[in-house]
Length: 388
Image 1 (cartoon, rainbow, N blue to C red):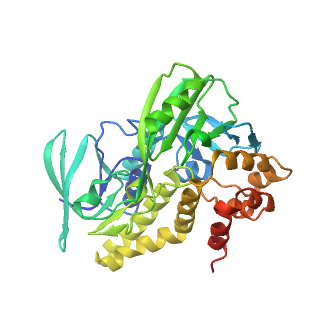
Image 2 (image 1 turned 90 degrees about the vertical axis):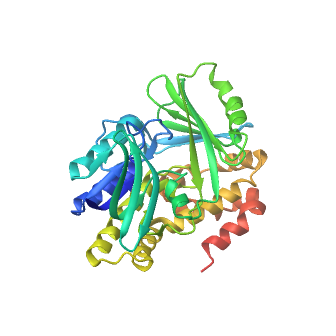
Image 3 (image 1 turned 30 degrees about the horizontal axis):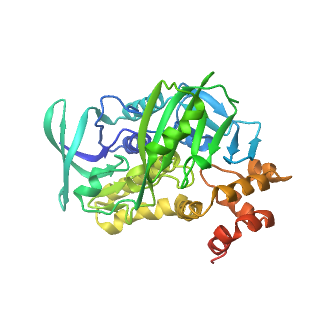
């Protein structure tokens, strides 16, 4: 049997790709290495409203809603805002991912759990994907592949393709903690090149974590001390920063974290992952209809995602690099500027977790912010926004 498409990975990007392909009438197989999707948990579980609704799920997995944020500089300043309406959802990722996978199955996709991909080849006649799973070693044939198998995607290795240039490692623990359930806490001092977070996760509980390029264990150990000696669940994960140089080739399209689509400003990848999955399914349907599987036909996928969110990701990489130049003292001064009249209102009005360009542009042109951090970020941001 030859499938139209094999999807590797049962996370949000893979499930959405399989769902969209199946709904388009394509014979679709999804393979997932774990016995259950969403485990082990490798995500903070905080989704913007846009990301949540893009996934087309119910509210069964929601354990908390968030309407604002609190920024703690680590020296003496704090800044907070509350939009007064839901801006993000905290979800149980196991339940969330399971619902998305069930939707793919209901759309007609065949699902194989506990099945690892250990090889793939592609030629003019199609693709062969080699797997090892509960049914032993098997080879499956397809016309195309969607690689949605995470930041360390095996398919980039199978086909000799370059991956994202930077990888962050993250650690998160569930801890007993009473907080303002409306607000996510951001702690930039916790990780010099990124930030730490405290995400409310139901009454009396929070998810405390951080990401870093190096010394992650040491930074996390120091950060979590302030929340007491007890944690009830700890997870680790990897976040790619920067897009792989080419996201297509060898009859394969790379989606989500496998392509490096995590947002460099927050590390979140559900929104871009699901959006990329839709574009992948659209491209695959066109290739199968035309019978053209060459790189020129596949390149339409890259054109679609670039037009959708490519500029925001490129902008995010710039911000990620600028973040490294922000000392604790500069961050503390910026925090004080954020407390100036009208700043919180601007964030509420223009802020968007998935597309932060608009609010960052507005803030970068604020004379007070430029005065504090102009030497570090000013000229680069201005050139970024006004290069055309």
